Amino acid sequence: MRVIWLDETNVLENPAESWETETSLGDAFAALRAAPADVLVVSLPLHACAPAKVLEWSRLYSPVTKVLFFREHGSTEEALGLVKQGATHYFDHVPTLDEVLEKATVNAISSAAVKGTSDWRKRLVGQSESIRRVIETIELIAERRSTVLILGETGTGKEVVARAIHHASNRSDMPLITVNCSAIPENLIEAELFGHVKGAFTGATAARTGRFEQAHRGTIFLDEIGDLPLDLQSKLLRALQEREFQRVGSSDTIRVDVRVLAATNVNLMERVRNGRFREDLYYRLNVVPLRVPPLRERTVDIPLLARHFVDYVCEQEQIPVKQVSEEAMAELVRRPWPGNVRQLENTIEMAVVLSAKRPFLTQQDFTAPPDTATQPVVCTSDSLVALPEDGLDFEAVMGRIELNLLQQALERANGNKKAAADMLRLKRTTLAAKLKSLGELRNRAMSV
Image (cartoon, rainbow, N blue to C red; front, top):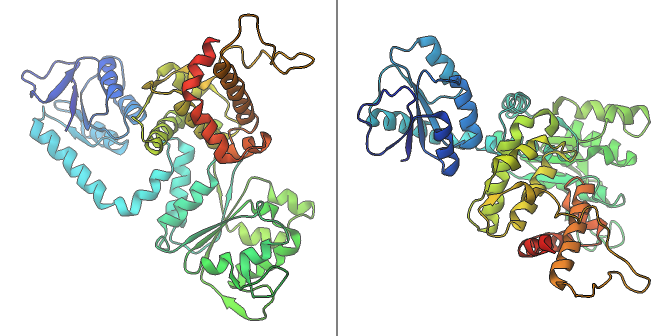
C-alpha cells in the first residue's frame, strides 16, 4: 500500500521507511499525478491552502486516494467538517503507520460492503452540485415504479442516467430494454414496441415479441420520445396507463409489469402547443421530471470526466494508461463543448488513438495539425492536389487530408461519431478504424 505523508510542519521525527514524505503541497500532488497513491496523510495546518482544497484536488488528480488529516489537539468541529466533505479519517495525534493502514483498510472494507448498491454511481462521473442533485434524485426515485422523464440537451448523458436508475432499482436483475424512437421507421415502430403476429403485414413471416413484452418485470427506456409519431401516441398512452397492449394483427391483450423511463432533448410542452404531441401523454410521461445538466453548467467535472474517458479508452485498446498534461486539461476546461459529454468523450478517444505510444496527451493532441484547418487542398484544372516539383510524402499528405476531414466532421457533428460518419458517407466502424490507423501517421503529417 502506497502512503504519502504531506508534512509541511515537520512533525514527523522518525517517519516509517514505507512512507513517502513530502514537505510541500506541490510536491505531494506531483507525486500523486505521477502515480496514484492508496493513502495521503496531511499534517495541519498547511501554509497556503485550506484543508478542503486538498480534498477537492485529490478528487481531481487521484480519485482512488484516501485522504486522512492530522492536527495535534485538533477540534471536533474541524474533524466533522472534513469527514463530511470526504476525508477518510481525522487524527488528533501523530498517527503510527499501523493506525493509518487500519483506518484506510476499514474504509475500504466498508466501501466493498456497499459496492453492490452503489455501483450505479460509477456511471455518473462528477463532483459538481448539478450532478449531485441528479444522483440525489435517482436515490429518491430508484425503488419507485413512477415514470421518469429525463430532459437534457443532446450528448448530456440521458441514457447513462436511465441506466443508473435501472441499476439502482429493485429491477436491476431484470432486463433494461432501450428503444430509440427516432431511429425506427414510422411504419415499423408499433410492431417494434408491441410485437406482431405471423402474417400481420407483408414480411411478417413469424410472430415477434415487442420491446414492452421483452421488458416484463424490468425497465423500458424510450429515448427521443418527442419523435414518436402522433398516431402511435394514443397506443403508447394506453400502455402506460394500463400496462397492457395488443400485438399488431392480434386482438389478445397482453399485460406487463414494466417501469417506464423516457428521454427527450426537445421542449415537449412546445410540441403540445403546436399539436405535435398529445397533452395527456405528456402528463403521463412527466410524472417525475429529471433534468440532466449540459457540460457548460458543470465545467468543474471536466477533469474527472476526461480522466475517466482516458482510462476507459486505454482499457478498451489494451494500451498503458495515458496522462493528460496540465496545459491540455486547462484547454479542455476552456472549451464550450456544444455536444456536451458525448463530444468530450469522442474528443478524448480521438486524442488517445492519435497520440500513438506517447504516455502524455498534450494540447496538440486536441487540436488539428498546423495549417490543415486553414489551408485548403490545392486544386488544379485536371487534378485534385498539385504535386510539388520536389515531390511529397504520399502517406503523410493523404493522412493529413483524411485526418482533417475526420476532425471537421466530428467538430460539425459535435463529437457524434455516427453523424460524422454519415457526413463522410462512411460506416461508423470505418470512421473509428481510420482514426485509429492515423495515429502513427499524425506526426509525419505535422512535419509536411
